[in-house]
Image (cartoon, rainbow, N blue to C red; front, side):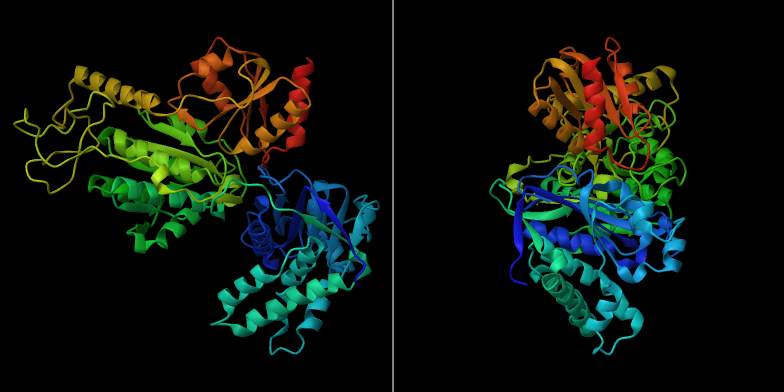
Amino acid sequence: MENRNIHELNDVVIRFSGDSGDGMQLTGTLFSDTAALAGNGISTFPDYPAEIRAPQGTVSGVSGFQVHFGNRPVSTPGDYCDTLIAMNPAALKANARWLKKSATIIIDGDTLDEKSIARAGYKTSDPFKELNLEGYNIIVPDITSLTREALKGLDLDVKSVTKCKNMFALGICLFIYNRPLDHTVNYLNTKFGKKKPLIAEANILALKAGYNYAHNTHAFADTFDVKPATLAPGKYRNISGNQATAWGFIAASEKSGRPLFCGSYPITPATVILEELAKQKDLGVKTVQAEDEIAGICTSIGAAFAGNFAVTSTSGPGLSLKSEAMGLAVIAELPLVIVDVQRGGPSTGLPTKTEQSDLKQALWGRNGECPMAVIAGSTPSDCFHYAFMAGKIAMEHMTPVLLLTDGFIANGSQPWKIPSMAEYPEIVPPIVDKLDEDEEAFMPYKRDEKRLARRWALPGTPSLEHRIGGLEKDFLKGSVSHDPTNHQRMVNIRAAKVARIADFIPRQEVFGDREGDLLVIGWGGTRGHLQSAVEQLRAEGKSVSLCHFNYIHPLPHGVREILAGFRKIVVCELNSGQFADYLRMNFQEFTYEQFNKTQGLPFTTVELKEKFNELLSE
């Protein structure tokens, strides 16, 4: 078919969806990487079920991967999709609400049998009519049987052949959007070529068969192209939030000269941080997969005492278990970073879905007066920066730091401009190797006046032996003290030390004007959607600005002045109003509207704009 029409678009949203075993996460990742290599701006959203293996063909077992790519930098994975690849009727049913008007639906025709339709929970035998999809561009290739036909000459069993159908679907999609096959072919050869060459060959054949099928079918006479984005010069790669977090820790280790240690217990959606660090033994990274959450953080506290830059990773339920040990790190004043990749709760809750509901636990979820620095990443790529800054604060201020991300940015990905480490500041831990001139004996809780940080004396250093532990200690000596006034003094100094961090972080900034009708406030992983909504409203002439927080405790300088410049303030977060309550505690003179969502899903730009317009019109 030579007479095809190529339409140029600014951006496209594609959603790949099927059973958990259909390989949709890999399919979406390979398409995303191909778009990134072509120079497009991209943002992705993996969406998979909580069950290890839900019943095949059911809506509860549907796994999805959404990618938004464009000819400019992209900050969200998109609200609704232009194209849906559905590998069965359940995938169609689960994703029908995310379709744009006149979207293209490509569904495996082999799955549109009576049994599969019933298993997906349809009440009739016509899924398209039942879902009111008659006005959409529906294409029904027999993906499963076409894949089997393409691979029939290979010495593979039926199950292995059928598994290649996701590559057939990917081939169709690469043709529709004028993307080359090279990256996927190279990936398959690298992954399977040496150990399983037949599997590599089968997947490549299926990929090319899907591409050729689309090329030769009049249903795909219209294809589309998205030109490369104009990005700042530099070297880029696609990165997820969890990867970026791990690499930010490695960079902090390098800048500080302290070896990196991670003691963690696997937990969704934080496990990839431990896995990524475990790959980097060549960079001197040490990892321990502990038997439980408590052991994980305790090994890291021991490593911090021994002079390592120590981190531990977890999610909400694990953070609860770590709380007593976090108190130990606070009272011992040891540098430690705890990463909490937030997910839907309480209890096991929605382990594969995103939420921001651990904020109050991060701020106050420990016994006693136990202040801890809290910061948050806001995009997959800036998790690198905030992991680095968490390490810098922890080591230079001799305090544990809690770094909050969430399932959305941890699993999502976007292009990341690889920074030059020369651009990053040095990290200078207060390590001491000898007594001060005015000391007859080592005083482990003697502090510098600037940061109020105590010194870091490593075990085995002559003349610097000292006691450390969870009991309250003397203001200078570190020996156990039950004196009431000493305890008051230590409580005050630990709080003052954390508050002093505000002098070492950037002042709070505003996206947009510093005065106006509406100030939108957010924190952490909601930034992409909030900024997109604000940008669109500002383009329409609306008086809206965004104040987005990464440093939570202590809050940066300059917040009160920003809040005073707006007629209305709305705080948007994926919980029931935790940051709004925090702002009310700190800045009681202002009134805060709230927009909250606890569905295990990120905001959509559409719903945010509706809320902001409603507030502006009141």
